[in-house]
Image 1 (tube, one colour):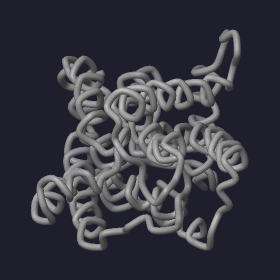
Image 2 (cartoon, rainbow, N blue to C red):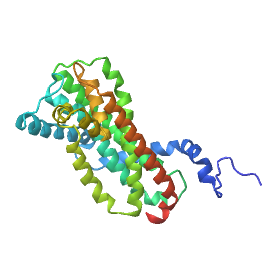
Image 3 (cartoon, rainbow, N blue to C red):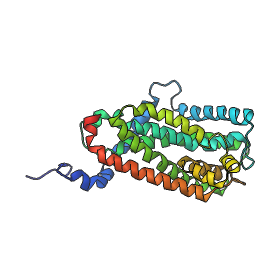
Image 4 (cartoon, rainbow, N blue to C red):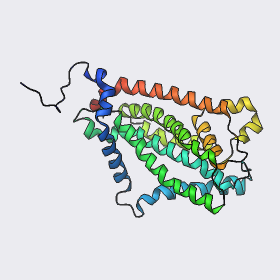
Length: 281
């Protein structure tokens, strides 16, 4: 009997042998899940997708008041403090929303996972894609701020895709680990917002990373850069602010190494427990 061309028969060892090929074959599902997540996020909201603009703008305003007006912290490269903060808020907002959405993605797609086969890696990947769409929308605020302050972009802006790739790397690895843990231990959904809140204040979002170097030295700053978002934020500021903004290559390399290690750990654990998702969610 001739088997239809589009029929897929699962057999022992199939998933392990064809997993990465299946990821490509199911690429359209990535688009569908990403569109679904966007629709769900902004469904029946009063201002719709404008929330992607309002959230980072509101956080920027609070940080400018707290760190610049009250704490009197200096800016960097002679740039306005609002621009300093928003240059960091862009990648941070992407990282935090990606991590939060990815960590809940497997449990949130329980109905789909328990019914059909597809590479489960697509689910947290779709959450990251959705957050990237929000990032692109929020980028319009950056363009507006640069026009408002007369801060013209320099050639360094061309390097932003590379730092964005590092931000994706920093978010995806922990996201895979947390969503796999969340499928088994539902306490994780309470821990993630708490961890993100702490990470926001220990990352150089509301202040210049150079303050850490100036007060504690280069060795302490390198240790501080084990937080992968330090390299990402410094890279965004170097590209956006231009001028005398400093990019520490050692700190950037530390962020890259930590992000890659977290991706390897997250992917390894995700693949190890992936086959049990249908039973645990």
